[in-house]
Image 1: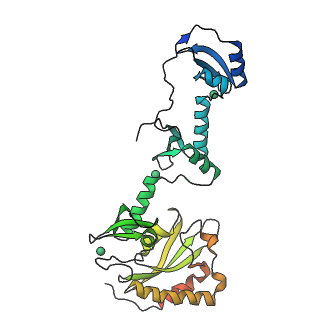
Image 2 (image 1 turned 90 degrees about the vertical axis):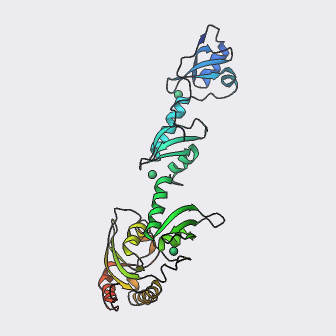
Length: 308
Ligand SMILES: [Zn+2]
Ligand SMILES: [Zn+2]
Ligand SMILES: [Zn+2]
């Protein structure tokens, strides 16, 4: 990556030429928002002063007469303003590509982005997503399941990545499966179906809303909570109780009828997904907190597994 430059106009002052500025040039420049200060460099260049910002720049005579000169200082200001409106800090334009600039994200990382994209962020149609932070997040998701993210999965669909298991085996896995942990290593067979799993009850304090609880199962409820469920690290949440089952498959078989029972006996305690979607990365299994004692009783009724 190249060090960003703030201005592409050379810092040395232009050589002024003692040649006449014709009246119709001055008129054309005036009409387009500029004063002509001097003729510079050769017979075909003018130094212009911008009416809007008072700064100067060099323009071709041809552009003054036939086009609209653009003030690089005003343009720079508008990029800076767009950056601020997008929640980013403007670092400078990319000298290699006139459509790109460098920005600092709130996380402190440097981003190279198209000016058009910044406008779309301001309009709210997309976000700036920092590649470095995103990569770290995917690595953490993989580490929580005992895998290392290697990179793209050539020849597979969009959602797939290449990973290496702690046993050394490399496998292409859908990221969604890595997030839920519901897959097995093809080499050593370890995974959700065969590994010990936990049925858990979690409680979430959603800002500005009544608390909710979640019933679910996971090989590692703590990492599921930290890396997968919470959209924001500062969201208040805790695992109230978890019960070990010998395999993920067994956990699934036990958990499913629990949800069916809750749905049948407490239909009004099911929370619609749009209520918690801004906070939690899950689409169901969320109940109002009045079911907390009911769910905890269900967990207590499960047969206890001796500690492995
Ligand atoms: Zn200007
Ligand atoms: Zn970042
Ligand atoms: Zn393995």
